[in-house]
Image 1 (spheres, rainbow, N blue to C red):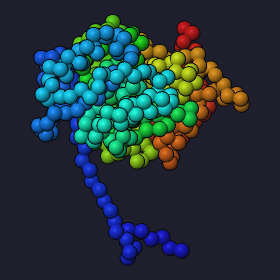
Image 2 (cartoon, rainbow, N blue to C red; image 1 turned 90 degrees about the vertical axis):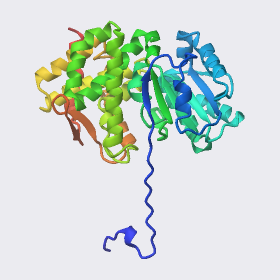
Image 3 (cartoon, rainbow, N blue to C red; image 1 turned 90 degrees about the horizontal axis):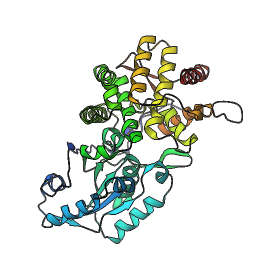
Image 4 (cartoon, rainbow, N blue to C red; image 1 turned 135 degrees about the vertical axis):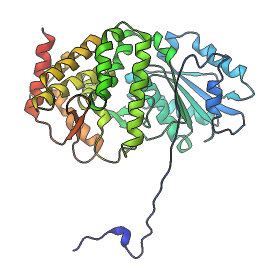
Length: 396
């Protein structure tokens, strides 16, 4: 048999769709102040000149950290009643990775949206951390095949990565983001004032995504991170706001220009460090938060990259020094967990990562700071040695 192109078949119609997506990502302060018109303007950015129905969901952790927030939201909508209709009182939903591990929140959100009779021109306003945005976004993308979602990320990690992209998801089948959709938001509003209520773990954890993208895309930004690591650890607000903006923009530029926004191929550079990071989260039963797990995953890949001649010893030490000074971990005891055949459990993350990507294993590694290379094989012995080196470092 000879190969043929199905599109040239005499009885074939070749369908081709080009659908443009655009959405603003704003960096602001205090969007729920009654005098601030920004939120109302964002909801009416298509100039439809009608009253918009909005369902609001708030992360339980954020609500606890900012007790006045729920009343502020209600007062904002009341002050702009001619433009906006609050479909119901703001709903509090659980956040964090544990809540993302199951269908309950997704079902509850879908059920509520149905009871409120929201349609495809209505809005869902999701205010919270990355896991909560993933779950509410997933539910929103399923109802009527997609309502208009406006994200208001409230953590460093959500503002610089998870909340600005085009994906939703939840954990299932023992794997991170096993279920999910591609669903670009209507808009993203990064309210930088919300960062001051974060616990130290969440403040620092989001810095791992900055190191991730700097190490493979922007050497100058890595130098900035190196110089400001101590300031970030001290909770310097101006330094963190710069980190959030630059990291978010690097992510957005990649999504828009790399040619694969919906990840049809096998390469996924923005998941540098994540094959191990995601596995660490599940091994630890989410005791290790996402940002900290990604930092450890980055550290594993950095040591491995040096062993393959992709990084110099000096480059490795600068990266390790900066992440450590920032307050990010480079080791956790769950790295010592073994499978029944004696292999380190974390190494199983490689095959799970390949399945999630689809097709051939493709892992992004730094090729010098600020540059990347994609490899299709990872030497298990060198990876085990990399983990052992991190353990030895932790004992110094």
